[in-house]
Image (tube, rainbow over all chains, first blue to last red):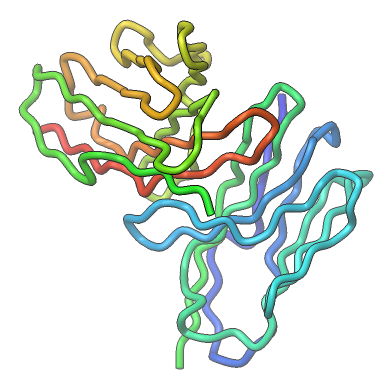
Length: 111
Length: 114
């Protein structure tokens, strides 16, 4: 059974810091891996999608990497801003067409 | 980009009543729609997968007679929570995709059962 874990569960940092959020999955048989952002009481915003054949994707200050062999993905946030405060979720798409979500990292960036 | 809407955004109901939540794909045809549930400070858990015109496939532990899913058209799926109880209070999120494409998520529906 695929399990997705995110570390840390919560993170509070001052503005300007570079951050690394971690995601690990137990089964390397994933089709792709996505990172999402969720603001309190809101739906999901897709940030980055990495296909299983890719190693990383970049969008602005965000960079996500994928290492299927070790079952890990990281989301790197450069020069964090208060507006980055949210919960970040990673999710692996199985070949059964199911998205399995991680436990989430609650990020707070203070001025 | 693809847009998925949900209605209502929040609903409060009395215990024992039924509540219907709609999920619509606004600018694409969704061959498959997914329903998730999210409890406070927890992650999303897949409840069921529905393909247009066929019965939904429910995840283990999800009662199909309690959570009725209808996917009657390529742009609309509904989730009906029957005989709702306080423990059904949760955030329900749908997603939709067309064949071979990624899932696009709705904004969610907050259900509170008194």
